[in-house]
Each structure stands twice: as C-alpha cells, then as structure tokens.
Amino acid sequence: MFDLDGVVYVGGQAVAGAPQRIERARAGGRHVAFVTNNASRTPDEVAVKLAGVGVAADPSDVVTSAQAAARLLRKQHGTGARVVLLGGKGLEAALVDEGLEPVSPSAGDSAVAVVSGYGKDVRWREIMRAAVLVRDGLPYVASNADLTIPTAYGLAPGHGVLVRTISEFAGVAPTVAGKPERPLMEETIRRVGGSTPLMVGDRLDTDIEGAHSVGVPSILVLTGVTWLEELVSAPPEMRPSYISPDLEGLFEAHPVPETVGGGARLGGWQADVVDGRLEVRGEGEVADWWRVTATACWSHLDRTGGPADVSDVVPPGPDRTTLSE
Image 1 (cartoon, rainbow, N blue to C red):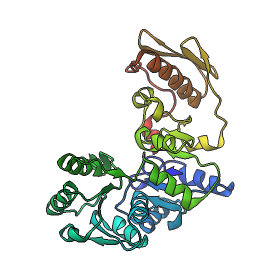
Image 2: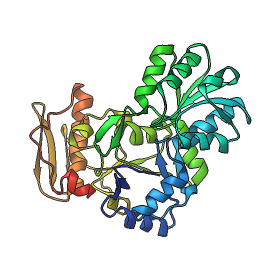
Image 3: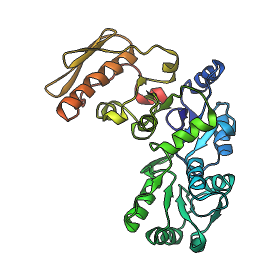
Image 4: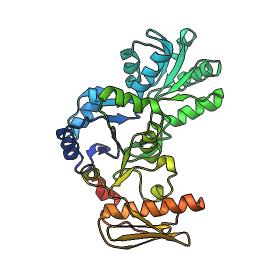
C-alpha cells in the first residue's frame, strides 16, 4: 500500500527509482495499491498522474479517502441517502459510485449527513451553511483531517483546517475516513486484496499511524517529509516496523539492532544518547545508521519522556533532497 506524495512522486516528478521498484514489486507477484488522503481527485485522475511520472496504474489500484468516506456513509445510511457535499469532484464521484445522492448545503434540510473533503472551489457561504447543519444535528464525516497540503509554493493549509473550523463551531467531533483512521486502510485492503498488507509511507502521523490502527506492518521511506528530528520524536503509535532511505528497502533484509545498555548496535554502527544528545560512531550501511539511531532514540524517549537532541547530527549518505530527486 503506497502513499503517493513523498513516496511515489514529489510534485510532478517521480521519486528517484520509484517507478522501477514499484514495477519490480508488481512483477514479483505483489498486489499494488496507491492510497491517498486527497479527496479532490478521482481514481482515474490519480492513475493518469501516476502514468505521467512513469508508474503504471489502473484506477482500480487507487483508493482515496473520498471512497472510504462514501462507503462509510452508505453503510451508515443506506443506498440512495442524500448527503450534503462540501468538496470537489473526487468526493462527489465517490458518493455517486456508492449509490448516494450528493446535495448542496442549501438543500441540507432533506439530507442525512454532511461530508467534506478538500476542494479548491468550495465557497465560504457553503461552509457556513454546512457548519450550521452540523451544529443542528446532522452527522459529520470528514474525508481526512490533514492540516497541511503540499503545493508548488510550499506547505499550505489543508482540509484539516476546515474540519477543525466546522468542528469547533459546531461542538462536534467528526468521523474521519482518511489516514490514520481505520476506514481508508480497511477500504484499501478490501478493494485490492492480499493476505499480508504492508503500508509504505513517508509521514508518521498518517501513513505509519494508519498502519498501526489496523494492525499491519509499515515501512518508512525517507524521500518525503520525515527526517531525523521527526523520527526520533515519534511516540510508539507512530513508529514504523521498518526504515529505509528509499523503496529499495522493499527488497532487502531488515536486521534488528542489538540493544547495548541504553543504546543500539548494528552493522558497524553504535548509537547512544549521552546527556540527552545523540552520538553515533562507526561506519556501515546508511540504512543501518537509521535503524540504530531510531532504536537508541526511541529507548531514550520511552525512558525519559523527552526526545534526544539531534541538532548537530548529520546522517550519512544522500541528503533528503537527493533522495527524492
């Protein structure tokens, strides 16, 4: 189960080596799914974008938070239910595919629920009407609660900002369909099949925590938003099963570091947290450096309640920019 931005592509460019490694996984008999919290695009549009960066994908390989939200609503309210739509065409298409009838906030008096997803053309008057409907008692389902969204001009406010606005106004906690909650992960497994799912992601608070939510292993790749500072501060529910600089880690053994005192040792590397600061010495494979570092720092975090200071630590090998080029 591949996350998209930061794993398969960054912006409009494929992550280095990603198309070849995904095809290698598929050729080896693995089911391949592309999982996204973005509810604005349809699976067909996502498949076209994947093809544009060199990744072969059928729309049936793509599972979105919009699809997870729509299935959740159909299970709760039945086929034909009228649902207030606050979002883009990806969410609208998902509702229709599930046999639901999307209606505008102005027609909310006949609806059974409100659903929202990212849509760049959603108007403030529609947000106000939907928020009042939620306050007055309509159940609220959010496709995702991501507070940021990557853009060509940097991180911008994501759909989670809108969700928070409606929730705080209405005094209601929404049901969230996207990662890290269960619905999207379960929908992916249901649609794509396979007996031993593995989540492949770059974000701890969505991809990795989402894997924990459904009890499946995960692999963190370092081609996206997570780097040393985020990794060493991860609480248990955001810690990956495996760590790899890139997708080559799908085809390699992942040896477990040996714990030594409060530190960790593996493949020529020794990592310790001394007086609150991370110290790593030795030499070896870059992936093993990350494994011993994470192990030592998580042990320190669990023991002391505070993250190790890594401000003067420079990981070996390619930097994060080179990894994603």
